[in-house]
Length: 424
Ligand SMILES: NC(=O)c1ccc[n+]([C@@H]2O[C@H](COP(=O)([O-])OP(=O)(O)OC[C@H]3O[C@@H](n4cnc5c(N)ncnc54)[C@H](O)[C@@H]3O)[C@@H](O)[C@H]2O)c1
Image (spheres, helix red, strand yellow):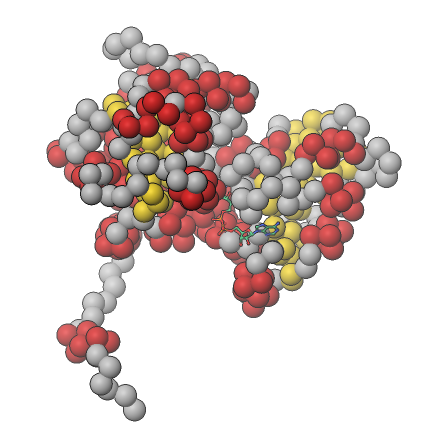
């Protein structure tokens, strides 16, 4: 139990023991973050720094918060999605690590927004964001606090899209580190993490067999590639829809069928959206779907499926299982099954990405916070990436932890690839 009076809003502190065990379980698979935490504990690079972390409250995030605490920071944690919180983890962070957490699985949008504002009340100097809701609220409602912010770090693609829009609008007046743009983030977290955990969410919610089913992956970016790859591995016939001709060619050459959504709507058994875009499955598509087609989303916000249009087409939805609701079309009688209310299915119905990939994502987060403290005075306002050497260092540490050695360039090779003189 906390030794000092701590403000928090979690479901039930008696869940702390379960959460503690699971946090330690995840820690075993996070060797890079652990090394950083150990160094932070001796160097205290964030001593006294006020941090707000807005992230999915999972076991992996708990280990990131532990690293901030070891570094001497005063951190507050809020959820970055109303459905992604693991209540036992939230309880353990309050009870065992004295971290103020404001996050309850299934909280309303109003509570979610209230938590964002409460986090801002702590007057953060660094904002660790996932989807940019804290920074966006700061810009809209708390402009007087902007000068106190030394910088932000952004976890996901959608958040970076929003930060770049703020940059274009000329309102981003502090540095923002685009964690998602690090190679050790998107190549692994978005691709292998989302690939595995999205299928995990679909399977846990429905217990359906994927083999032999037609799975439509909407968006062939980093996340879409991972889902398509793992879907094929489970025996699904994967169809891809895209709006970018280059990504579409890539999907074709990777061996997937590519077609417009209007056509895919008629053939799909399972639909997964990962575009970061709005209403990519819309009214006209729902109307075309086969009876009992399953739709879900793994993109950041719950606006990829136009559920308002689906509700309009359907009778009252029927809850079939946790995170599974069936909508019956009033005219055709055909049913569309929506998973996880259209929110990130991998976090709503499963546990999000496995620790092994979050190890590298959160190593980037921890080092980005340290980077802001060291360099904020020299960094220009706007979106930045961490130096490539940091990316390489994280990958090297990961390889070492996996017990895998690689080659080094010989002096002869280094000279050859640095010169233009040698040819045929
Ligand atoms: N579920 C998770 O845990 C998780 C993890 C990482 C990222 N994300 C989120 O997933 C989303 C996708 O991330 P990403 O890194 O793959 O982004 P990305 O930019 O690499 O890929 C998005 C793709 O969607 C395509 N697209 C856009 N509009 C489309 C449309 N109408 N129809 C078909 N395709 C369309 C784009 O052309 C692009 O290829 C973002 O919202 C991101 O924040 C979720």
